[in-house]
Amino acid sequence: MLMDRGHGTAVVPLPSSRKASARAALIELKDPIRTVISDCFRQFGIETTILGADAADRLRREKFEACVVKLSAPAGEVMESARTSPSNSRMVIYGLGGSAHDALRFSKYGVNAVFREPLERSAAMKLVRATQMLVLHELRRYVRIPVITEISVQVMNENRRFNATSIEVSSGGMSMRSAEDVAVGQAVEISFALLTLPRVWVKASVSWRNPVGKAFGIRFDNTDERRKRIKEWVEGYLEN
Image (cartoon, rainbow, N blue to C red; front, side, top):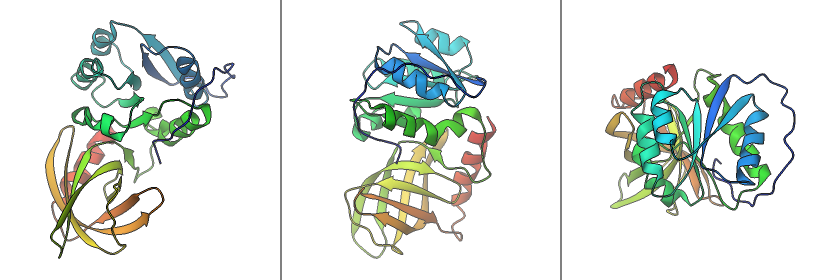
């Protein structure tokens, strides 16, 4: 899971075993949260840069591989600046605080993952570990891209439709979270939009479910040609 709950404490930065090869912008974060997140990134060779009130302007002018921004009203301007910048349009955006519902307010900007507050170092480290390959561009062929957006799910052969929140997407399927119950093998049709990908509909089947975490995964129907648009988007995202 990419969204973990905990509380934060200040830590003494540990020496990194890797040379920094990517930069993450920490936007108006305060200690001890800033120290915890900086240290977590450092363990994976990701350098952090502190940005202040001029963050939106700097994201237009400077190249970063990721940024962390608090999920509050001013975040919209920062995310808009990043996504419209030629050099940062595909950067990994981490939200800070709030819930999945809060992240959905900014879903058009493609928030990739959220550090939950109160922040705990172990939870922050787990999140960075799960996403650092995307930040460092060390990607396997069928990588899963963490991204938070709203999914509309139509259960086939039933007069039932509900919304879910995406966790990860790949060219072959998606994982998501919803309070609604689904069964493994259940046929569904989903629709969603992602950044430069206009709303797409595709048939799929439920491949796994975790009742405890209210999460489940779906596999796209190989006979549905519409899935190719998702595959092209994933490949394009990884090439940038």
